[in-house]
Length: 115
Image (cartoon, rainbow, N blue to C red):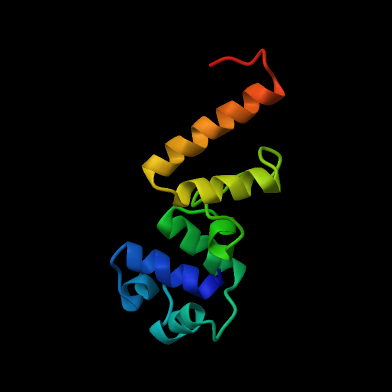
């Protein structure tokens, strides 16, 4: 996801106008619009302020993760992060099915594993 789309989504999630966000960031409305439309590259200092405003990570703003608070790379592999992203898109019913299937596969790999 592009940075500018993420900025717009964050703003709309908080029901804020571009003017309100620009004011909170001490920016001219025109400049903020350029960031949100992708006409101007978002400087790091502004990205940090936006992350603080919305209580999200810089990785989230940059589109590097779907997790608003970010995740440290050593904690999860790329495959694990992709699985988490997919899991979060599922309905509760499908999440339950996936969890059950994962348990079955784990038992096949390690018969001593128990719930």
